Length: 210
Image (cartoon, rainbow, N blue to C red):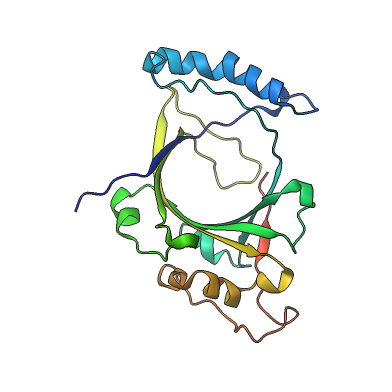
């Protein structure tokens, strides 16, 4: 059975020094016209260039979560919460909670079965294209780039829920309830039950990336 991609995303690492505070739509549009449009014109003859402009400044609070032993990362999964920063990241606000499987094997991702997102939407199947780089395991080691610029593709399947994200929600048991299919993908079962209190439950922890 032929598998069709829902989207293809080109990932770029942006240098924060190019965006001087305060952030504005003017600086975003200036960066787009100066840095991105010439690349599109050169590589695609401009036929795929988007003519619209950025007309809204939106700041969001984004966090990634995992178990203490990184059970999600070990299974090539990531769990992300995202909310409008104007709420101050309030846990009482409705967050977008996304579970993503991402790996280099197209066929494994395409054949994975997840639940449906809110509104009975099927999980989104994407190709993520990014500059090829390798980060050695040593924390202080620098990222290594190939001698000749290259790219790599990874494929992802993303399932989204809109849900409050209070502390008592951030447990392994609640994760099982939000995404029932997740246990088929993990190397160990999720622990705990919905009846446990946050003080005794196995909490998910926010992950910090440098």
